[in-house]
Length: 512
Ligand code: AAO
Image (cartoon, rainbow, N blue to C red; front, side):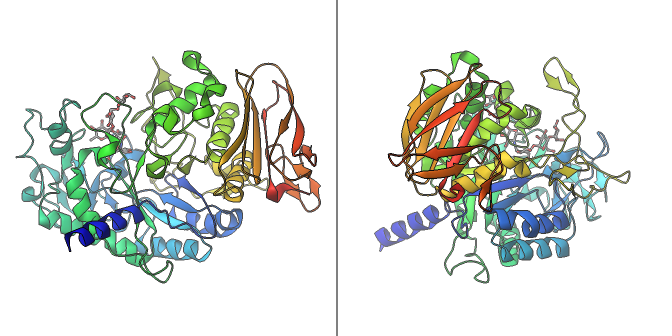
């Protein structure tokens, strides 16, 4: 009987590694700080038709309203209750968005905070996104309800009550992260409250959760909470589907806590991935693209089946969290498109594409003094809607990297080659590389200052293919470059080192 229970639990946790994607879709886009109404429209007009697998949405719970600095993006990482009204919209708007996205095959993954509530010095009052009263100083959150019994103040052993040393796993888990009131997740009552919150989202129709700050929670407590989650709503998912769980654990090595402690519970964010990918494309520390021949576990990343990967995220694109200066973002578009293209072409991990907003950076001594600036907003602090221009780019300050042709088309590339192994690797022992995905796709990069001219075995059937980086196949023609593949699978690739996008990608669905 015991063995049966163990096998059942193991099976349960393995299922939590599955994103529950529909129709062979493979990628998540993080629509950071988008309003629910805008996400619903984007699902219907773009993400569904283009084959995106899902959207990571910003935390939907009630959060504190911070006035100094004025309405920072990170106020949403300071919960006041689990009421579903936030900067992105109301509960009704959230429900409408989840239904409309599910209807077009786009899953919703919720950025979920169960480690803490708001900052200990957030004061008393109704400065919260739904107007709930709270008293942070006395740990009084009547809208949950939580009281001082439900926090780790007594358990933490540091004098400040905050984490002071990441080398001490007890501090990291039992003390406040940056003054944020640390919930006592070992308590049955607290476990019940957070599971109730997550199950309400499952009932509404979400496909899974991005679990915030998992390093700061004991794996055993998380395991109990995940075990209390319902199967997904059968209106949208096959019976018995488990919520997809991906856990934020920043592990670049050298600390007391490692990602490995969490991989049995669900996937884990692999922060080494973006940090190294940035180094490689920037050619820092003598890195070369040709060294990525063994990209993935060969570079010390976690096992492929446990990894959630990304080039940048909402933290490290502005110097928060981890990854350092090597992280590539939309601010470096030429290298960024290549790095995201490489991530989407390579078989490693479940991929997440960042979609950002612009802000007025003010970098002093390598640090952005304006790293707190929130989304494009009106005078009253409400978030501006996303405007889509006639050329399909976004306005109103939204960057919409996911709509950049090179990135959109590589999301489609990943769908087309899904399940195919990496194949036909070539490199020039420098920064020119190429590889295929079985007989379904092939990509070539020239990250040198000089031209690339090479004939390679693509593994593809003979024919004429449209390059999906410089354009795409529209009807019976290519809007950009085209590549002729011979009956032997070989093709000649020419890429100028000065090309605005010095990479070419072709796949089975871009064949004329
Ligand atoms: C805000 C203010 C704070 C204030 C606080 C309370 O900024 O000054 O004290 O309110 O009033 C976000 C913002 C925070 C914000 C917070 C609450 O980023 O600035 O604080 O909302 O409003 C740690 C956690 C990780 C966390 C990251 C930011 O482990 O989970 O800090 N990320 C998530 C979210 C994030 C959010 C929160 C958590 C909180 O993605 O958006 O914060 O809900 C090391 C450790 C990491 C640690 C970092 C930063 O990283 O390993 O675990 O992340 O330090 O503290 C190299 C090292 C790398 C190291 C890194 C940075 O890369 O290799 O290990 O340097 O030192």
